Length: 387
Image (cartoon, helix red, strand yellow):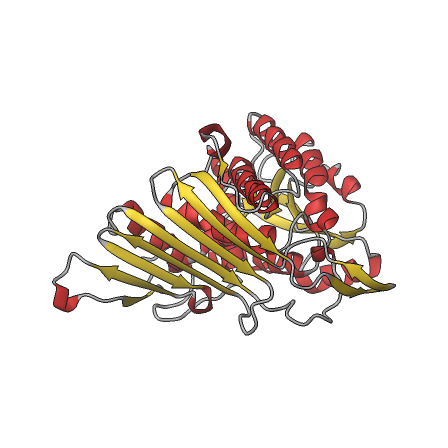
């Protein structure tokens, strides 16, 4: 994509609710802490003219709009940040890529394999023209998890044998919690599986630099109906998911996800067990990594706490003096930083749409296994490449 002279990159974000707010905060702050190409927060897009105008003013956008198609056509827009629900991802992303716009899209990539494949094909075609695309698995940008990946790559854990991942929330515990788009298959694609298990699965692939070869899973909907605007509505997605994964390396991983885990607000816990050591992480203590090293004498062994807030740790040199913690919102700032850096360098960013499609195949295999009552689903190497 050719931009005249030193023209700042014009950014448009589509969606202004939960993710739109998180992304807007990142766009507003990233240049204050990282050296990134010049850009401008041009337009925030949403369906409700009054609400999106109010959000745009609050979140630092120059203007608002209700028609994403007309925004994509504008010559002063170079980046499209898609924070809209999953059922809109494919249409917006493909249109933006074909128009020569760089695209960042929230996870999961799409609601169906077909949509995800179309998006990935469009991204590959656009990449040949210098147009970049990335999927927003923001937990890759948690400094402690980036450090964990470095430890594993350095061989500090030896051969990784076993991984446990659990992403648990409780916002749907109350059976009277109202119906939302996240509880309808036609708009959300799936429930806890695509919403939060996708994060856990991506982390396993990211941390281990591995691929999935076999999948088995179970899905459960505990509350079949929710109060809707016109009376009770059927819930058509899962409340909780359980997944077993066999990895190409021979490691075995288990994933649990729930949005009805009473008392768990936003708990993502990862445990990685190797022949020489182990790592554990909990999102509710995101500045900490627990490391067990079996190469030291037995009398010194045990999990030790690494406080990940030194300038030498990933991303942290840009923030506060050592010892000062950061939070969940910083992961989005790091994500925007990496995306802008990739655009400037011309190097394809990660996670790519291909990696997003890979996760989509795994999610689909879980659904297939669940429907078949715990059948083992084989995944070919060609299906899972690109992670």
